[in-house]
Structure formats: structure tokens, C-alpha cells
Image (cartoon, rainbow, N blue to C red):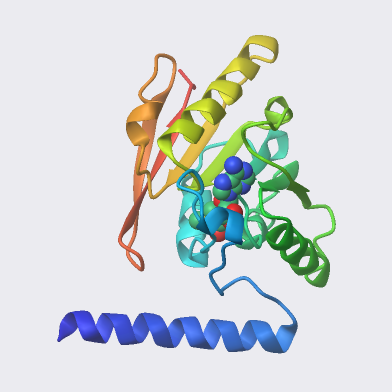
Length: 205
Ligand SMILES: C[S@@+](CC[C@H](N)C(=O)[O-])C[C@H]1O[C@@H](n2cnc3c(N)ncnc32)[C@H](O)[C@@H]1O
């Protein structure tokens, strides 16, 4: 009975958010996945990180915001980018594989007057600009094979531009891949709405 009540509450909240967004010409809440993603075992489709949980993550980050650049890897419709724009990061950007989702993210940012947020369309595996960022966010976007390639690319950038980095891994299905020398888990947060954990890793000593 309790489970049913929780589900009804969650669904009610989802419908309210969807309706409010529709009225404002926004689109963050509806889950989506392109055919390519639906048919792939490598990539996961879009659903957003709840705003409250993202706010908690951002509050708990101990980073010098003004000197930090935030990248959402697999940004979908841009819900996390909107939240990250509420704190004074030097820069906020997202990369998204799906062209349609990237367009929706761009429209959302424009509608909210967040033109300084960059929504890049591309594959995280072939992305060559990780060195420009130091705070990385991932909401379980892909398989372990893809994640290990992306992590390798991020860690490689430390050779050319040594810096403090943070990797925020929401719903950390393949977290064992982050147990590498030089990185440690600094904190664990819990999203009560979806029952997901978030692990925050850093190379800060
Ligand atoms: C679970 S959603 C997370 C959306 C957003 N980060 C959030 O938390 O609200 C994962 C997103 O990753 C994208 N994605 C999957 N594989 C990707 C890849 N190789 N490169 C870029 N984006 C990818 C999917 O299209 C999807 O939009």
C-alpha cells in the first residue's frame, strides 16, 4: 500500500511538472530515446536527474565555482544544465549524442535566457574537449565499455593540463571503473525520489 502511494505521488509530481513546462514552452520532464539509442546496448536513453537532488549535489560540492567549468556528459534535454547555471560556475556545457535532444536542450536554454550554456551535439567517446572542464556529471548514460573509454579520455587530459577534477556519477551502475589510482570517492549522496545513489570522485589530495 505504501509503495502504491509513493508511486502515485511520484506520478502526480511528474504530471504537474510536465503541465507547467508545457505552459512555459519548456520540455525537460518527458523521457525520450532516439531509435539509435533504443536499439543500442551501449547507450541509455533520456530521463532527467530530479532538480532537488541536483541542488543537493551542487550544494555539497566543495569547488571554487568561479574557477570551475561544468560538463554534463549525456545532457539530454538540459535539466542538469539549468540547475548548474544557478551556481556561479565559470562555464556550463553539456554534450549529447542525440541530435533531437540536443535541439530541445538548446531551445530550453534559449527560453530560459541561458544562452551562455553550450549544448554540444556529439559522442562522448570522440569528444576532444574534456581538458576545458574540471567538473563532470554523468547520470548513468552508457555501458561500462563506453564509460571506461570516456574516463580514460578525461584522465588523459590531466597529463597536459594538471588540475583538480570532480566526477559526479549519478546512479553509479559501473562505479568500479572509477576505482583507479589518483581518484578517490569523496562523498555519497542519496536521491530519495528515485532511490539512486550519487558518488562524487575527485583527485584532490
Ligand atoms: C539518463 S540521461 C541523463 C540526462 C541528464 N544528464 C540528466 O541527468 O538530466 C543520459 C543521456 O545520455 C545520452 N548519451 C548516451 N550515450 C551518449 C554518448 N555516447 N555521448 C553523449 N551522450 C550520450 C543519452 O542520449 C541521454 O540523453
